[in-house]
Structure formats: C-alpha cells, structure tokens
Image 1 (cartoon, protein in one colour):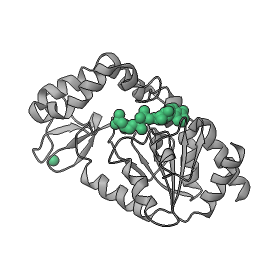
Image 2 (cartoon, rainbow, N blue to C red):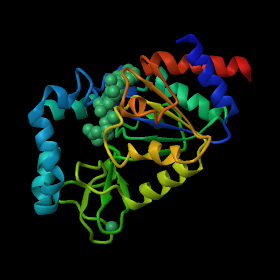
Image 3 (tube, rainbow, N blue to C red):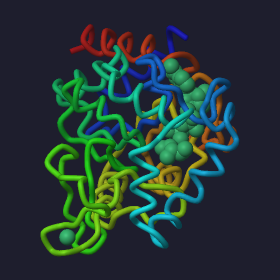
Image 4 (cartoon, rainbow, N blue to C red):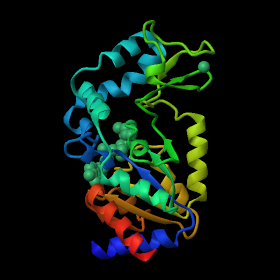
Length: 259
Ligand code: APR
Ligand code: ZN
C-alpha cells in the first residue's frame, strides 16, 4: 500500500493536467450510503431501485405526480435525502480540494449529487448527475437553487415558461448537454485521472476513463474499497484498495513532501 501511495504522489506531481472522478464511495465516510456497496441503497432495497428506474418516465408522463413523489420521499429514499442534507465533507473531499489548491488537480467530475466537494472547497466541479440543491428547466436548461423557487404550484415553472425538474439526473434520463461537453473536454485534455469511490458500472460516466485511456501516456489511478471493471479490464494502471478518507490525505502528505 505504502509504495502505491508514493507512486500516486509521484504520478500526480509529474502530471500536467490531472483530474479527479468521484462516486458515492467518497461520501460514505460522511454518513451517506452508496448504491452498490455491501450496505448500498440498491443492494439493500430492491424496491427503491425499481422506483428509481421509473422516476424519469413519471416526470415525462405526469410532472405534478413526480414532484409530489420527490417532496414526499419516505423510507430508504427519504432517509437518503435527509442524510445528504445533514452531511459534512470528510478527509477524502478535503484532500481533493487541497490538491486543487496546490494546482495539481484541475477539475473534479463527480457523480455525487450531495454538493460535498463544493463544501470542502473544491472549485472547478462538474456535477455529472446533477445536484440535490438545484432545479433545472427542461426547456432552456437554466438551473435554480432549490430555495429560490416556490413549490406552491406543481410542477414549478422556469422564467421561460418551461417545466422544471429536480436537477438530479435519473436513470434513463439524458445527461444535460453542457455537462457532457464540459466533462468530455476535461477527459480529452487530461493526462491523469484519479478515480475515487465508484463501482464504474454506470454509463455514460464510466465511459470517461475508457475514452481517456485511448490516448497514449494517460495514467488512470483508482482509489476504491474493491476492484472494479476498470481494474479487471486493465483500464486503470493500478488500484489503491481501501477507504478514500484514509488514502487520499496520505497521498496529499506524500505530494507535499516532494513539493
Ligand atoms: N472508500 C473507497 N471506496 C468506497 C468507500 C470508501 N469509503 N465506500 C464505498 N466504496 C466503494 C464501493 O465498494 C463501491 O465500489 O465505492 C463504490 C461505490 O459504487 P456505487 O455504489 O455503485 O456508486 P457510484 O459508482 O457512484 O454509482 C454511480 O449510480 O445509482 C446511480 O446515480 C447513481 O451516481 C450514482 C451512479
Ligand atoms: Zn427555462
């Protein structure tokens, strides 16, 4: 483990354009359950998963009922959203913010909707699956902070007259174009990807490392509690297996020793 942490520190220091990709695993140490880990939401509640797969269809067919469901979340999903609102960043989030401050990590592309990277001080963040703190107009793409929109009349409407949905991207929902463009640009410019706390099975996000790996010389480092398809298929150069909240701060320490 020790020399993999030193190796990651060296690789980061020699990189010209390193970015980080993160998933639910980086937030479990903040008390938010992941989805497919042993205690994950989908692992423990198949019904919640089945409902999640129908949520976008519900929005398309009956946006009022969709909002009533979102605002009335109970059970697993209700707890999930409550945990998210209460959560604070952990050392894993702070380590990535520090690497950005040191000028080493240029951008964080996260699947997480919890807003914890921003809370930890990261600045250049792409929320690939949206945010619990925002609403998005499906006509013009404008985003609003949750508390600046009245939810008296459902579904809420944008200034352009368009219907607004939760900014969170649901299963089967297309990733907003601005997000696809920005993350595609980062993935095509980076020479190192530090992938933290994701099972790397959900597309199109899981396609980003594969796209980057097509270019010669791009390094892909995983930090995860268990191997993923990126590990098994040799897309990543190496996996540092363990908790992001323990490993990432040690990587920062090693980087600082070498600065
Ligand atoms: N440190 C490192 N790895 C961890 C930790 C931790 N503290 N906790 C969990 N993990 C690992 C799990 O072992 C698992 O491999 O993080 C991974 C989390 O994977 P998922 O639960 O599948 O989460 P994610 O990859 O982010 O899911 C992608 O799927 O459900 C949708 O939209 C949702 O954004 C989400 C997407
Ligand atoms: Zn609009």
